[in-house]
Picture (cartoon, rainbow, N blue to C red):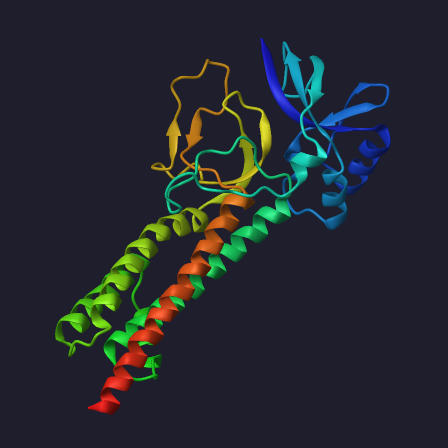
Length: 296
């Protein structure tokens, strides 16, 4: 039996340095000045020095023939270098369909653990600014004034975005039905319907990001292909059993999504763009109402 695996390739000096920085690391010598180690050396807290060392290491594909243990006594054949400087450059994700739809599984994960964690933080922060804009819009539908704090506090007391969005929609329906119509009303109503639909769809991507973990991203044959944001194993609806793999293959579970920093950064930018549009509608509604009230 032969198993393919992607590993890190080190010189003796680099292997000694890795042992010094990560006591649990155990690079395996495969020739006079060539060592390999699994990407699990990145597991756990990592210092800037460790990340700097790891980022300088090329990856290679190895064939482990007749394995006794994963990297234990066995014949190991280094096939080829499988990551280049070009591969380490930040990726840019461009959707081929609707931007709110889950992207296809990437070919490879991120090389940088830090970039992945930072993208998660930015995306979740961007989503919260969008929710703040939604709370302001709720306030605009309730009162023709610039004082939104009471309705914003009420908005935040409801648990779950879908429930909050339903409350905003109910307020919007009543607002457009009962308010004295102006020349702007049809445009505002249509813009709200469009934005409300988009925000609800993107909320699913926010949930993907918020309820996931950073971990090794593996190919269907089981070798590491970087890091990705993945649904946890206990997420039954988001981790599906694979029945089309040979008995020795791993993993037996396949996530329905895997995000790298590129996909997450794309969603963060979409959240920020929606925030701008929602705030704009909120100000538009309030300005028209205030102006109409002054004329009345």
